[in-house]
Image (cartoon, rainbow, N blue to C red):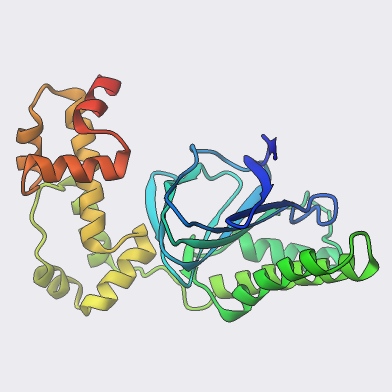
Length: 295
């Protein structure tokens, strides 16, 4: 097991967690990973990957990413993508989660990917860097692409021509499948009413937002409202409202001397215990622990 600070990962190969170094064989796809959690495992600290996009597919379970000030829930059958400049972290790996991921090293200007022309490389890189949203539905081609890469690593002899050829072709096919899925029907809705609701929740999280009122204002069904909320902010409406309330609670704890009960009551939590439980789920510490750290 050895650390690679520039990529922010630790290589290992165990039944539960495989993080493989492919940098000598696939410089443009230096890390291939898979995790099957049999127990809860702590997440990572906030980080970036030098020149690398991180492309994560969730097959089972669900996880949460913090990325550039937002919380993103990655559910089964979805992809989550970060760009090299994005500060992000996986909160934790819950029991039963099954994730696949790769790092894609963005080539320097004028550099071509193996087996691709410069023009083809520019097209593919631009396609990946211009995804309309970080979170989008996956496809069978993506799932099969991850499986194919691991099959080549596990079955093809090291340093053989067949291994190097199959690795390159499987890697390019996976990247192409991710780019296609990310641009297929994932346009972020430009609905002024919906954006207005999101802005109000951020500014006034203490308000009660009645579902029927939201549906009437946006003229959406309940399932469409949840889907479009996830496209815009990464969470369904109620979960996003709770996240906004927790954010306001952090401010009140750090900037005032108000009691936990008073803050919980203002932000519409049913009790101080309910508030403390949700707060710790989101931050990892109790409300008073947060106040002590941030006063």
